[in-house]
Length: 197
Image 1 (tube, rainbow, N blue to C red):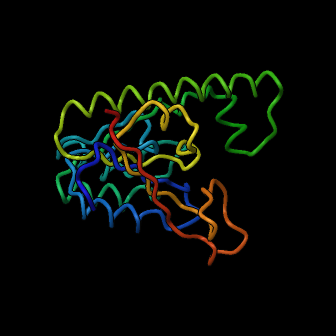
Image 2: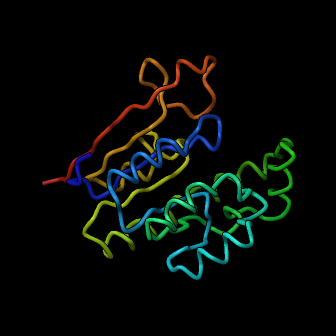
Image 3: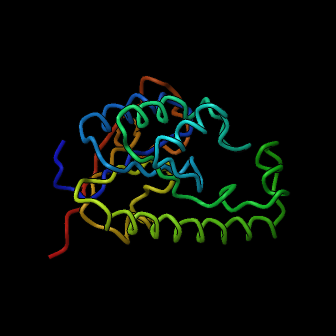
C-alpha cells in the first residue's frame, strides 16, 4: 500500500460485513501513528493507561457495544497506535433521538430536520479532527468511518485531497451503504484523489 497518501479511508458498514478483517489488513500494511474512528465517538485511546481502562471496563457507549470495537481496540493497543474518536458524544443525538434510533421508531418531520442539522455538524467535526491529526504526523492517517460519509459528493470527500478510499461495493463497483441482496456480491473497491497542484 502506497504511503504517498495523507489519508486512507476505510468504509465501515457498522456490522453487515466483517469490517475488522479489512481494517486489520490496512492497519498492518500502513502501521500508522493514528487511526481515527467514527464509532469511538469522542473517546481517544492515546496512552497505555487509557487503553487499559477501556479494555477493563468493556464499555464504549449505549450506541456502540464494546464487542463491536474490541478487536480493533486490542490490535491498536498491541501495536501502540493511537485510536482516536472523531465524532460527537452520542453522535450528537439527544436522548429522544437516541431512543428512537435504538428502537428503530419513525421520526417526525421536525426530528428529520434536526437529524439533517446534526449530520452537518458531525461532518464539520469529522473534518476538524482529521485536519488536527494531519498536523501531528508524517505518516498516512487511517480513517474508519461509515460508508455513507464516503459518497463522492460528501463534504468529507469534497473538502480533502490526497487520499485513498477503500470502500465496500457491489459487483458493479457501487458503494454499499446497506447490506447487498446477496453476500457474494460484496467486494472492496478503491478510489483515489491526489493533491491539487
